Length: 156
Image (cartoon, rainbow, N blue to C red; front, side, top):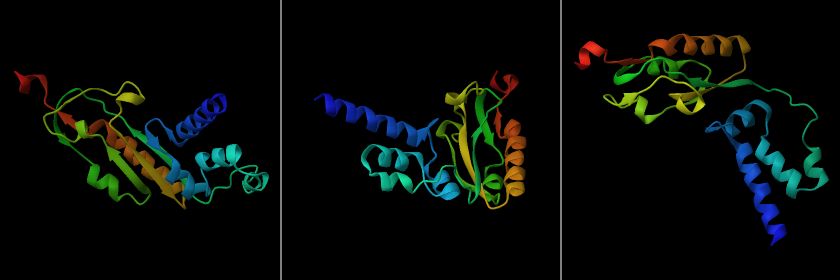
């Protein structure tokens, strides 16, 4: 039973390596460096030394990538969502998700205060670091105006 408990703990650690901050990093790392922390952990726990030797000492980036958390700057009843269509057309956007409450008009939204209260996320991947940086900056520039809420006068 003790060995089973240790194995369950090891697999739980492996799963937590796979998902961080409620985002799936696996596609990002697979595309950018060709492997991911979950595969490495499985090979370290259950594989042979040959399995482990296939990983380089230092990762080699085949592409550049990053995760962007969407920050909401406003509280109130959601009136309009801006920039999503344009954001998803950016050349380095690989995947994105805006959480349902930030897409449902009339829902109560609050200002992002930490990673648990963000509005969603975007994965950026590119062959060109300048392109990725420009897309990242554009998304950050859009964040303050991404979500429109009804002002106090509209609510009275």
